[in-house]
Length: 234
Length: 325
Image 1 (cartoon, rainbow over the protein chains, first blue to last red):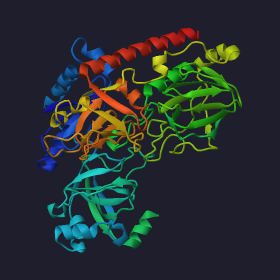
Image 2 (image 1 turned 90 degrees about the vertical axis):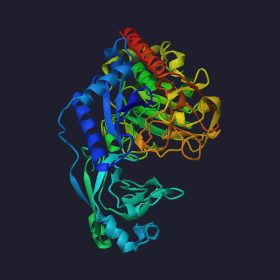
Image 3 (image 1 turned 180 degrees about the vertical axis):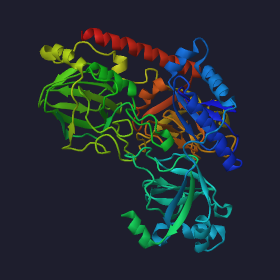
Image 4 (image 1 turned 30 degrees about the horizontal axis):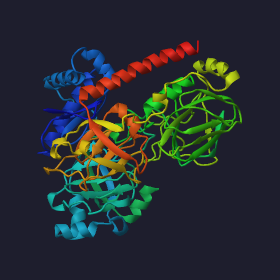
């Protein structure tokens, strides 16, 4: 476990050096997140997960009040270490649900399907079959509101990001970047290779929580026709 | 109870102190890029510190209200006129019904925060009235203001009554916030930073040795800098992790980006440094073409500076309360 300051009001806890086995690392990160949520340490305002870390956001004024003469950061690190060393059970609340995401892999949506197929040395239909045949895990949400970072991409479908990012990746685009796959919840710039589009809304500020997916959730992609896409998009 | 936007200016948005608690859904913190200025201005008109006001960026805005309001502004050295009379930053003033308020950006500095007693009565979305311009929600219709917009103003807070009564004669208060608070510039010409996770991957003191220039691609997400290229001496693959406003990340082209309030929640570029909280207001005043230099401080110094500013703000709250009793 390693701690790195993220500015003067946040701290990153590195739980693993590298991703390793994604599912194991995900459990380690989710357990740490859950223990810290339950501990509700004084001054801690927000917690987020990434692939191998948990970020702890805090109010230095409140933490300083508790730390007395000790350095605020040292005090907080000691509390976090204590919390994470406790042999408490991982309940796994929140996250862990299975989502079937409908994806239309048809022509005009699949901007880079040909490039991915060529890179993998298989047909476009085979890329679709393998991409929709896998089971993926959500490690974190970020980049844009609701954007899921997923692990579980079949290795042969991995392809480097595009040399220069697109200015506008359309909303709902399902894309591959390196060994990751993800979904663009809104039209935004992006450098990943787009292979399809989902009509499913991934982010809605009127909903609680606003993001459809949460860290720990499982995702499967389910191919749909253009006609089905149009029906679902309505 | 409405604000009429005759001229919206270059880029004017409704902001409050930001949207905390939704980073795990990928939602930016956003809010006023200088939350301290927003709090000070709100205190000056008797508002709740977290009331929503306007963030003005460059340009010139012309505004009117359909009832009397107390206004105040803080931030960059804007030229603000109420009914033809100049109103200095950090001084509450009375804006009479129908009177015109004109706020014009100066040749230097980029942003100011302007508040009206009662704040803006726009819907709270995910715990905040701030405009998320990137995802188009919150604030006023999730967008920057346009000419002709009509915004609902809230009911005045109890503290405003006494301030308004004192302004009936003079219209512009002779008291207010210190100049340092109402006109935020980097007093020493440096943005102070603490080291980031990847600082050791860059040549020693690369950031503090060089001078940078702000490019035109800068916005509320980040200040893009050019000048010296910062190249990593050690190239390792990084796994995406949390970034925060103040983070200085370095993409492969070597041109650093100083992230601001609307930045993404997770990033994959190496983090060379983080500008400290008390210097983020100065960062929010950078405009294209400005020169930027950085100076390193320790984490403890950064936190002490923040605690000192909070103590000063607490004294200011008490001072305001005494003024209005």
